[in-house]
Length: 467
Image: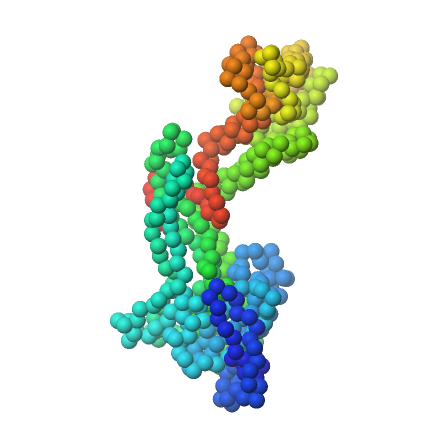
């Protein structure tokens, strides 16, 4: 291994770990004269390529940096191995070591590829087809877990690897200044897709609905990318052309990303919105379950995210004065109906120990009645001056107060009676807000999943689409 011409280095490949900086050995042994120009040309070209990619992604293409491969936007140590029938480049994970090591090996690509790639990449010549049997290393185990019992069942075990024949019958190979022909480029960023179908479970999901799971995963190897360039004229490697190669590779990677995302989003246009709502609901639940000492945190969260209170609203007015009092929210839905919202504290009692409604609930109810009386007495003024066009004299209203866990079965029956005596009034706990928002959003966008890790769910049309 030669990092600097005239010096010899060695490195050790440990499965699952990036290569550490090569260690210099035998400094008295020079690189053979016939190999010097090859190593110099290839090494300086790869170095120029990485420098160009770094400059482009910090300047001209900074806005698309997040969509480019890891080995281009933040490379670690790069190992370049030249041999008699081509070049192999290994881009390692980013650790402390960063730089380029360039070396010569007398083995061929078929022997070097599995060694450098930790048994992920294999190359062979056509005359080896019958006897060639790769021994792929990384393994993936798929299992299904019963959500109720917690028991798991093994579905399958597969090994991940790439095996490609080195053939010269590819037609016309690229000529300078084009980038040398790349037989294979494997990035350590794989996507696992599984197509399934929902089954009826207590009426909670729509049976027969097809779905596709998308899981981004990484192999347990030390590299980010492996590239194999076969049967090349080493004069093809020219640092002056490296910037063109880097720019095209960056743009091609972004185009592939956009096409993939577009295909999945067309498959399920609601996927992105469902994911955003899932994050929002999860944040609200975590805050609610944390029993915040400062009640303002919970009300502030709803103030910033009023869609949880009324997911289907088309217009919203916070802190709107109606008469002598100020509402927390006024919402308008697509049908033109309005909703008045009064927020009390999640720590407030809904009922007293004797079963009577609490002072806080009675006060909130009185607030609602005051608003409605004012609207009834000043309907045209409210519609004109407050901008509540088309509001009725008796709009819908909700009171948000307390927690569900504080209510007994008898309390729940009394709440129903309370609401029956007050048409268009709904009393909800802060837990009810979560469940109500979840139900409405699922009805509009599809059911939420308890997704974990990097898994995403896409619902599919009845006609199965090819991925």
